[in-house]
Length: 109
Image (cartoon, rainbow, N blue to C red; front, side, top):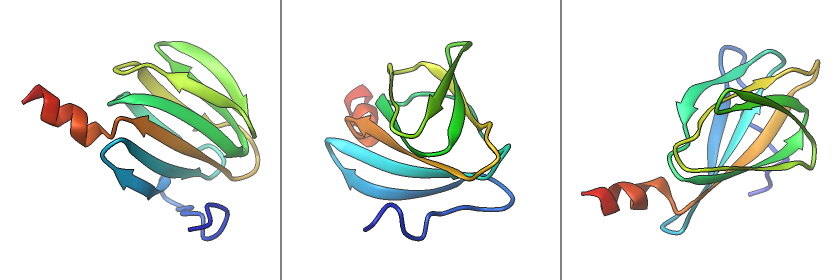
C-alpha cells in the first residue's frame, strides 16, 4: 500500500483506513478535509501521530498543540484528544498504536 495514493478523504466526515493490523501494532490513516475534526475520544493504546500533509490542532488533555507535515506527536494511553484540520488544504496523518488496542482489551479480560 502506498499511503500517498487513494487517501480516504470523505466530504461528510473524516476518512480513515487501516494500513497495518497486527498484534503488536495498529496503523490507521486519517484524512481530513479543511475544518473536519476527529471527535473527542481517549487514546485506546500508546499512540504516535505522524503528520503527512496539512496543518492540525491536536488537543491533548485540554492543551492545544499545532502540528504540521513531518511532526510526530506522542499520546499516552487514555489521554483525551481531538484533532482538527485548521488549514485551507486537505490533511492526512498516520495513527500508530502500540500495542494493537485489541491486545489491551484481551489483557483486561
